[in-house]
Image (cartoon, rainbow, N blue to C red; front, side):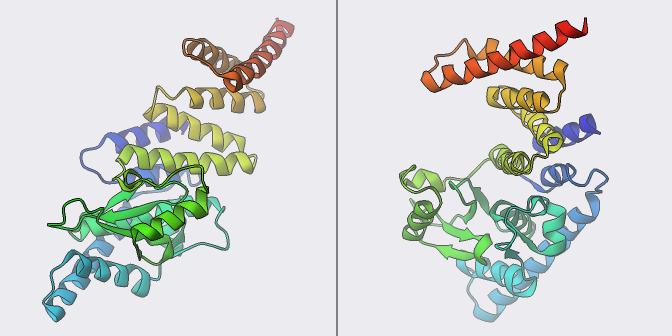
Length: 292
């Protein structure tokens, strides 16, 4: 199942176009191994068609074809009619990161609600990009004939609220404090790969916090599959194998990590980390020797 799941994510990540649904549903199979993606892709298709009808009705009623009119129609459909909402009460629930559950329960976290928003808008003929904003994923819709504009910045977690640049500054301060200075580049469109990686990192953090190490390890395998150069994921997969008493897997990954990481410059913190990992490797080698 692990190989099949990783292969499904890689295929979805490399498929033509910008669609996210199949990649997100492959990720959901960590929690739901037998999940059939087709009914949920079909549900998104139907939602996209309904959103298109809502847009056309608003345009016919107002005679206004602006981007703002289209986005307001999508917002009304998703958040008023369908009642999608951010799950504030159980934010850390892994189901919030599974697209099938988000579509069934109509609640989720910022990134999964944003995936729903992007997939529905795309099917309705509206270009909406993801925004890899620190601490709180957003979406944006380019405004035609407005050069230099960041477009309409939309927060699907808060009912499709339209955010000004000032709002984004406050949002950044609330989520990351002074660690990151606001810059308009933070509102740049995210690639499909960046969005998938962020979804996986969110899940890995949750699983580690819950001490669900087998699931966390599977997430690292998926991350390595789509980003083979991610040394930190090789390290984490080795450490998770160590916690799971997989001596062979842990030794393989941690030794490879130390070898590859030693080729780059290291600061004091990195050297301390490497010393700790080296202690793990020595412990693992003693275990192997004891078995021989």
